Each structure stands twice: as C-alpha cells, then as structure tokens.
Image (cartoon, rainbow, N blue to C red; front, side):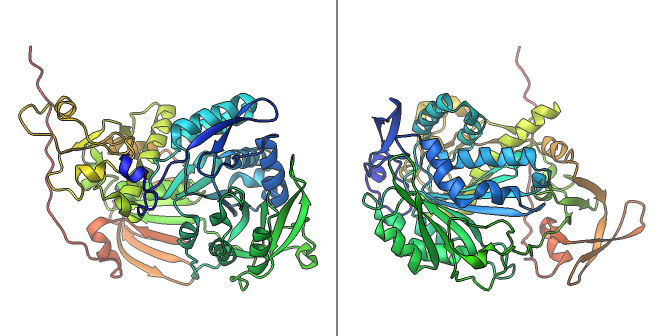
Length: 533
C-alpha cells in the first residue's frame, strides 16, 4: 500500500490498518494494545473469559441459539471486530450447540461485524497464535478464519463457513456508514432484524465514534422488539445513547476489574410493527415482564427452488441454495456447461477500479469473494479426489485498456494488487521484447476449471440436474409453475417455491422483466504447445 494514503486516513474509503503495541497482562502473557487509541483489545485478566461473560452469557446466546427452529437464522451484529476473539468464541459455542441439538442441523448463524482500523493479517496471525497456545480449543476456528481473512480494503467481505452454517459479513470502514448500508427489505418483514448486539468498541474515553448518536440510531433502525445488547462499558454516553434509542438498560456484574457492565433490550424499535421470530430471546438481565411471555415463531422458509440454466452462474446459484438446505432442481435445455461456460478454462480476474470506489465496485468485491469460494471448493475437490476447481496462477494485466494506472494500483494492499518491476514482468510473462513497465499483477487470480466446478457441485445431495427446455413460467401467490419439453420431447410440468433464471441472453425470453442483454460474438482459441527436443 502506498505510504501517501496510509498517512492520510481521511482519504475517502482508504482503510488505515491498526497499529499494534504490546503489553504484559495480569498472568504474564503479552497482549495487543491499540496504537491509535491506547486501549486494550480485551481484558488483561482473561480476554476469552471476558468475551464469554459479557457477550455470550449476557446476550443469553447458549439458551437462545439452542432453541432455534430448523432453518431459522439468528443474526448477531458486532461493533469492533478487533482481534476476532468474540467471533471465535461465538463460533465455538455454535458448533458445540449444533453437535448436541439435532434441530440446529439446518439452522443458521449470521455474524455481522464492523472495523474501521482492521489488524493486518501478519499481526492478527501472531495474536491468534498466542490464543491458540492459551486456548487450544480455538485452533479449529482460528485457522479457517485466518485463511479467509480479506485484504484490508473498504466494503463488505462475506466469509462463508458452510460446514458450520455460519456466514460472517466483515464490514471494513466507518461503522455508522456500514450499518446504514444494511437496508431494510420491507417485502420480507423478517430478514432485516438483528437479534443481538456486541458493543465492543474501545472505551468511550479513548474513541467516542463507536458510541455516537449515529451508531445508536442505526441500532434502533435495525433492531426488532426484544433484540438484546451487551457491553463491558457503563459510561454515561453509552447509557444515554441506548435509552434514547429505544433500549431498556440494566447494570449487572462486570468481568475482572470491571465492577459493572450493561445489558439492554429493545423496547421501542423503529421496526416495532414487525413480529418477533425468535422463541428464545428472553433477556433475564432486564425487568421486562412482557418479554417473559413465550414468543410465537412466525418466520417463513422455503424448501424447493428451480434454477434454469446450468452454466457457471446456475451451478453456483444451486450450490449457494443447497448449502442453505434448500433442495434444487437445475434445468438446462441440453446439458450443464453446454454454452459459453463450457470453455476449457475461465480467468478469475477483475476489472480494477481506483481504491476509493472499491467498496461499491461489484467486480472487485465479487472477485475477492469468488477467490475465497473457489479455494473452498478446491478443498471439496480434494475430498472427492477430483481435479481442482481453481489453479492459482496469478494474472498480469498490461493495462492496455484499463480503468486504473500504476499510481492508483499502489493504493491497494500488495497481497491483492501490485505492480511488478519490468524485469519481474518479463520473467512472469515470458515477453522479452515488449515494454512491460506499466502493469497490474493480481497474485490471487487464476484459472477456473468449469468441468471440475460442475463435477464438484453436482455431487451435492440436494442438487439434481434435469434436461428440460423451459417454454413457460407462471407465478401464483404460493408457488411458481414451470412447463417445458424434456429430452424425449415429452411435456413436463413442475412447481417450486421459487425459480431463479440464469440463462444468459435467453433469460429475457423466459421473463420479459429481465434485462434484454446485448449479444456480442466472442472467440476463444487454445492450443497445445509443442515441446522442443
């Protein structure tokens, strides 16, 4: 990353990495301290025990998560990701509960976290290695978290741990701005609500921005009646902010040197017309008699989806749905990968943008997510003893028609995007005559093997492929009806809860509401190099 932007945190949408100092805690262990704010990332007494006491126990997570219904999703929002210790402890609890409560096999945990000054990967690796020594039970969670940890660029980075039905949305940037982008979808009254808040910013005396009215206003907007919150802080600014934005608060016993801490429950949510969907959000720390009543479970789920089009888009849509325990029938008029997706290889590389646009640039954020997804699919392919889905080759762009120059590339973290020297570019590309001084090198880019992707995805037990040329789709209030002709020229009719159309330029023919894409003829050439003797 360029020194200029690193020294100018006010530069729009440029992330300033945290500066880590070290101190000795009460037990003689080295612990990290924020260089920006001079505050500890966790208690000197025992950070893991503090997390469990403040955030897990006083949001009643063991009880609430254990009583989730099948396919129910519980959402936690955290202010201040820090070292990730809260996520790790929550993840461990979630896995333990799923092992002992069979109905949680299809329930989901959604963890939303924000961080303006994220810890660089090298520092985070050092910090969590120390926790791995002190609490070996966390190593099973530390390793996949570090493997998925994103480059430090602004925006929302979705980390999917599908084997544990856990989704982590890591928002890098100003917390109030990040929370404001969590839109309320009024077409489905149950999706926008936060069930529990972890208020874990640095002390208000050190950093007041995470305790500002704008933060509490977003909390009120995103909370439902009976949403809970917990924080180690009893500062006046915290108590006033919670009270003035619909929360009923109570002081309870703190952890370690902290005599008291705060718990809170939402009693006046902006979304107060929404029906609670959580049976178990009983907050025994708050004296709210109406909350003692059993809450009715009214959330909706769907079980069966048809995906039309079995190219890369359709395959990955089916995979995403199946990993949410939704049965999928994948339809194509001929076969999977019969169209342009059937090319021998696909290049995973984005069209880059200047860094200050990156948080809203679909190409870049999507590229980072795709890279994580394909690396995960490689692990699945190893288990299946099949070819890898992604070959990490890196990609060299000579910037002939680019939206970005080498000075703007320098703003990015080097592990995401950098510029090679002329000599390095020559070695990498084997181009000896061309001027390669202007270039973009993407270390995480590579070649996707569509056939390996198809083979891996179609092994999922909830995905079934069927050849069908769809000619009509009709919607009712409850279902979608699909009609088509199968390979034997028989008319087939099926119904589903939902249909997703992934048929490229033919999508508009199936539903006129879909954008009519402009068709551009492409060409792909490939060859086998002849080895010289």
